[in-house]
Length: 52
Image 1: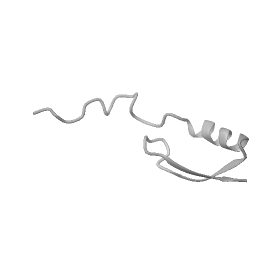
Image 2 (image 1 turned 30 degrees about the horizontal axis):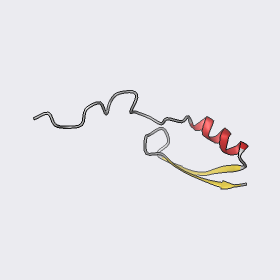
Image 3 (image 1 turned 60 degrees about the vertical axis):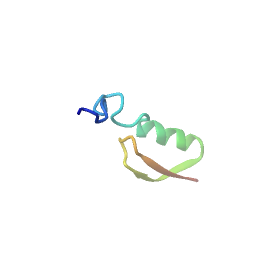
Image 4 (image 1 turned 180 degrees about the vertical axis):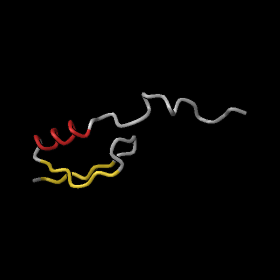
């Protein structure tokens, strides 16, 4: 029937919205350390940051 979601392979929807280098730099400037990253480079990335 063609009722499946469309556009999920579109580049606008694939990958992370924030580059990991930029995230790490921003965290460091805020006094945080990235302790754990799960799913880096995907839409479902989770980051654990702790105060230094």
